[in-house]
Length: 146
Image (cartoon, rainbow, N blue to C red; front, side, top):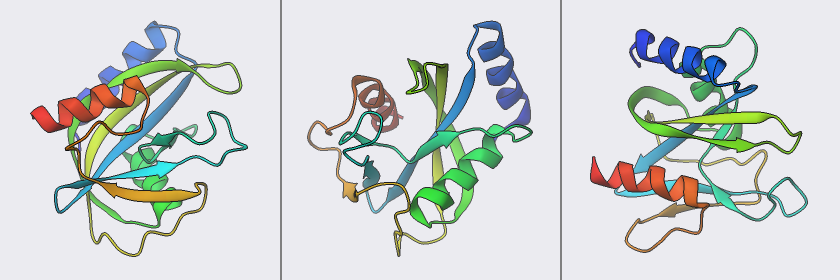
C-alpha cells in the first residue's frame, strides 16, 4: 500500500487549502488498457467518462477509500496501491470544494466488471485521446509518462 506519511501530507494540505470533500480516483490497468466508467446521463456531469472514483468517508484513510470505491463501482478487488499520480480540484454537484487524489492500483483479476453506479465501462488503450475531462487527461498523461 501507499506510504502513510504521503497520504497524511495530502490530507493535511487539502485541509489547509480549504478543501471540503476528499475524493480518490483509481487508474485500474490490465494488459495495457485503463478502465474508464461512464456516468449515468441523469447524474451530476452525466454521460462523461471517468476513472473509478468516489468520496472518502469520515474516519477512512485515502487507501481504504480507494480500495472500497473500486470494489463498489466495479466489483474488482484491489490488491495493491502504486504510484500517486497527482490531484485536481473541482466543485461537486452539492457545491463542495473537492480534491481528487489519483493512484495506480493493482487488481486481483480484471473480470468480471460489475457496475453499480455507472452505465458503461471500457478497457481503453491510451493511444488516442480518451473521452474524459481535461483534469483526468492530465492524470492519464502522467500515468503514460511514468
